[in-house]
Amino acid sequence: MCKSFQPAVYLSLLLAVLACGSGDSATPDLAPTTTVVEIADYMGEKLTSTTGMRENSIKGPQVVDIDSWRLKVDGLVDTPREFTYEELLAREVVRRVVWLHCVDGWSARILWEGFSLTKLLEEVGVKLHARHAVFYAEDGYQSFLSLNYIKANDIIAATHANGKPLRVDRGFPLHVISQSKYGYKWCKWVTRIELVEDASLAGFYENQGYSRGGDVGDHYYNPDEGRLQP
Ligand SMILES: Nc1nc2c(c(=O)[nH]1)N[C@H]1C(S)=C(S)[C@@H](COP(=O)(O)O)O[C@H]1N2
Ligand SMILES: [Mo]
Image 1 (cartoon, protein in one colour):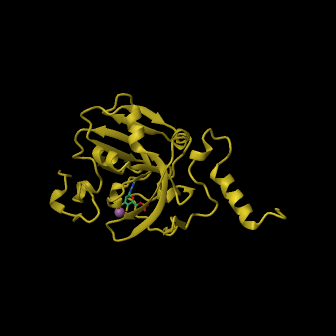
Image 2 (cartoon, protein in one colour):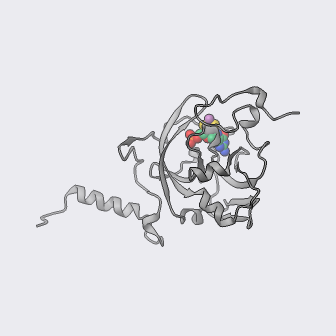
Image 3 (cartoon, rainbow, N blue to C red):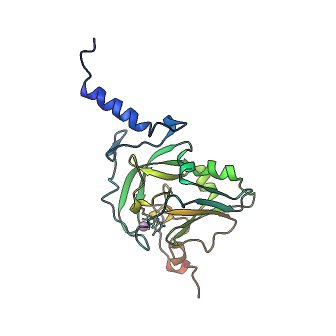
């Protein structure tokens, strides 16, 4: 019946093995997709290559030592915690194609994979009066999102893009995927998430007069809104 394996069969076997990761994972079917070549199309949607994108971060790409890197979660939480990269990779994977629009006038559509921020925050216990999550990054960058928005949209913290671990210039090891908000709300190289009641002084772009909500389509710049007073 089966004279010889067809190339297509080999290819799907190869992809199945690759999708399972290194093989020693406890939940291989839940691991992020890891392909040899970056994925160019996903379920009929054409993706933007993560290699050809503009990189305009405030201090350039940050190189993180992944062994000593931790994601700290603190502020208005019941149990402040630190997570290693391995611990985050072991979480249930959420996968989503999302457009990123930068206020500089360029956009990219990427398949992001990572974990649910809401589930992570539920684990550490969100105090009743917490209203916002402030994201801090390796380069000193900050941005914030309301907890209502994070929950309503099941916002992802991504470890992978287009089937590969994030590139250094795309925010390795962690990039917040703030869908339907401008790129400046998408913190890269995240090191800490702090839950706060009032986020009035908590954004690099927001403090210069960019919209605090940052919703795509809104008028996003009003210098009178800048909060960085002498
Ligand atoms: N840590 C950090 N995160 C950051 C920035 C930054 O300068 N530093 N720039 C923001 C801006 S303005 C944009 S448009 C997006 C770009 O994300 P990308 O590199 O995945 O396209 O990152 C956002 N996150
Ligand atoms: Mo941006």
